[in-house]
Amino acid sequence: MEINRQGHSAYYARYHLVISTKYRRKVLEHGMQDYLERIIHDVTKHRPDIRIIEANTDRDHMHMLISIPPRYAVCDVVRIIKSNTGRMMRLRFPWLGKRVYYGTDGIWSDGYFVSTIGIDEETVRKYIEFQGREDGGQAKLEF
Image 1 (cartoon, rainbow, N blue to C red):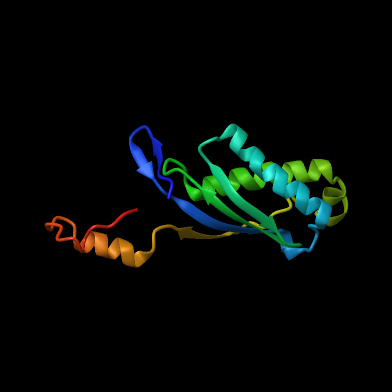
Image 2 (cartoon, one colour):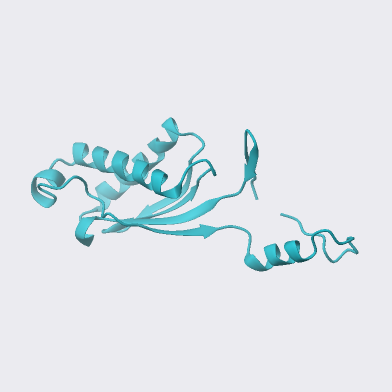
């Protein structure tokens, strides 16, 4: 497990993020999916502490495994990803704005799904339970 470090913190904060196209329209064809998977990593050029670990798309949504430092709110990172990828997709595929999403701001729906990924709950519970006790061998946990 890779622990990330910033000025006054150490963290392992990974998220499963799913964003879907507006109205769940199945517009992400194969060439578009490849382009989207490439440009999603451009976010890290401007914000190198945000890491896109995995990204994959279906015709109407995109899944990501992403590492977000504690100084960013998840909703702010989602906004950055949606606005940057949406803008780039509309520039590369102008028909998205002219025919599919005419009169709307973007290609992504307003909402998103996020869940945390990290050390399993049982390991954390045991670590907290044995905190402060003398280690008799059974409480030694490694992250």
